[in-house]
Image (cartoon, rainbow, N blue to C red; front, side, top):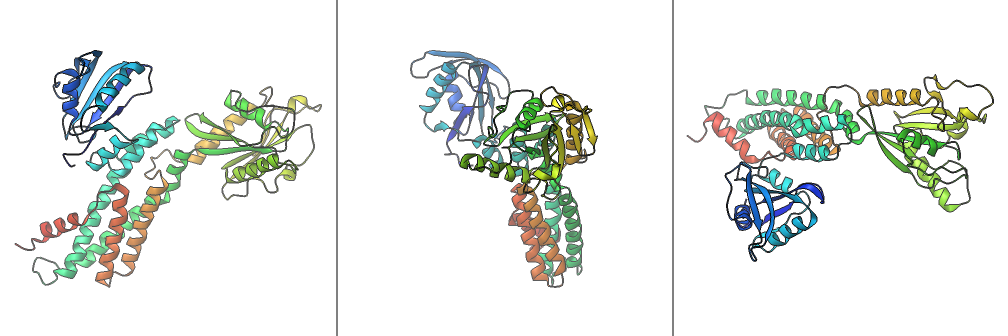
Length: 451
């Protein structure tokens, strides 16, 4: 990157107060900033005890540990300095005030350290996305998936595809532009076509399991729906094990959708408590009912709650509610069995029916066990998912479609080569690392053209 680029700094640890705060500095003036603050430049990659002082006044700010990572062997690919200081607000503020007064330094923008790592070739886009997912992972399953992306599960596979696609492009371009050269074989187009077919099959196979990775990243969405006063909020609180929703005997208490994020045996689940579904003249409650229907209709699983003391059939409330979306399921929960006069055993009544008491907890173990098993089944195989985001899926779909078109028009060499180029451009957007120079290098290296 340009040597006149601004050096950035920011807090790379949690918000103070804390035991330790890590202030990171990255850019061409990182070493100057470190010398100004500590009076010396530590041995690279070796933690060194330092005293941090204000360069203008000489006042001692803190005693800390300093590290220095010269470019390019650093997280961002630039010179990087880190100060591990005591995590008080005053300490961090004093260091910030000192750094911001230095020429060529400024506070980093959100994600700027990672962006510089990408721009300097330390991370590709899939690894950047994996890092973001790792930071926001709520469950162990999400953490494992994010970690695999950060380690290059998709990025490495994309690099393999990239190399094969560059070879196919080089063969196709050589067949068009250098067919009269002795170094170019007569079957280059057929060889390029064979590579394109293999690539299209590999990418299509990857796309066939794309939904699984996206589902795990986003989590299983479970909506609690039903008539007013059926016990929806009590059920939410029972499952969440905290008072997440207001419980009241008055109908219409829940007006908006309440979300609770759960970890069910490592599987991410978002539980939605929706407004009671009924006809109402209250405009605010009516809006809540509309939102309840919309969220339930978009959920992966709907828990339709009925009052066990009433004999209304389950179908009575199902019109306009959940379950209509393809792939979604609806479970019927007969709630308040503790208040019924007739004896009703708690637990699972049938495949999709449960008898529970959200108030006492009767039958809840069976319901939670079924939810956990459903989540495990919903997220599918334990085999790692290559695709975890919609962006990745759409980019690979573009590459696969371009390859399919290339195969279909292989007899027209110029169009065949253009479709390969479009596939390469789509694949390049996946990692950010495919350009024309790679193709030219392959042509000159493999065919010795121009010697």
